[in-house]
Length: 255
Length: 168
Image (cartoon, rainbow over all chains, first blue to last red; front, top):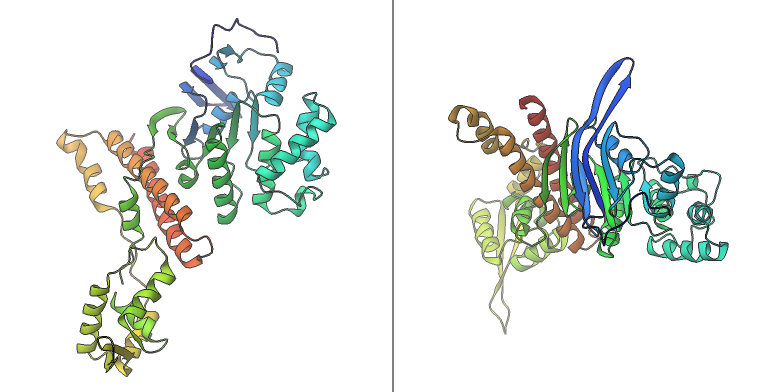
């Protein structure tokens, strides 16, 4: 890949964002969706961005994935500036270094599970043999064994999102972005996706996720509250058992 | 604990230790178990109130055990319990008092209070998820208990966001 800036040693952050802004214009009305965001994400971190709908959190994620362009500000991936890349370069970046999953899965409905997962590997220039090997690995890791020849429409929501995760991960991206990944799933599907994201994180995957579901957010190490286009709180969750007693107290039945 | 014990006895006579085991099996480890002493005390009170009747069973090599069964009055209590809707959950009034009074006192900032409370809830949510993960996945009652707690907490978090929207 062409470097737009010379790399000077390992970057301190995998993702580094400064002064990011984005205004949407709909029917003449201007909505400031992202109003000056600074954010650093270290390699291996699992960050959840939460907030009400309309707070601008999905726009933020789209900017991080190059699906929308910022009005101003700077995004660096692994120390290299990427916000000024062309569409084509962003497409390459998303194929190789940034995997994205969406609320409605966005799978290719006419392709089998196996083909959906292999497609990005083939597009990234890997041989069919390599693509198949990676697909087999991720089918195993995401518990999709036996579903390879199914079409997405024949699967439950939770399974479709697992296929989308496998597709996003097949090229082993540095960064996984997830936009409301449980937003269209039932309780069971949600639990499944939370469990998988937690496992992927434990295996070292860097994840930035947008969600309005606190159960999903609490699986992350770090939770950012996003309100009216701005970060209003940024907290690292407690990973000790300090809150266990209080949690046990909540489920205490009094009859 | 009175009514759950009565409800367990509606299935048939049992002694204190069996009732303890019944509760544990049903609700799993997430539910802080009553100790056997509490159960005996409660059974004593229920018996005094005429809702259950106890009978000592002589065991040759061990202390006697007392088997309890539901009386007619006890059965009526259980029926009445199932008949009545349960009380509504209450809002977190202590936090709301803080939030409402903060501006008058000048001693705390509302947004800081909201953020602090949100952090607390998120940590609790994480602890609940851990409880759920540690619990037997096939114990549907225990999983539903934890899921119920999570959904209450989610509602509290949503409400914090509403507070933030209105007050900021």
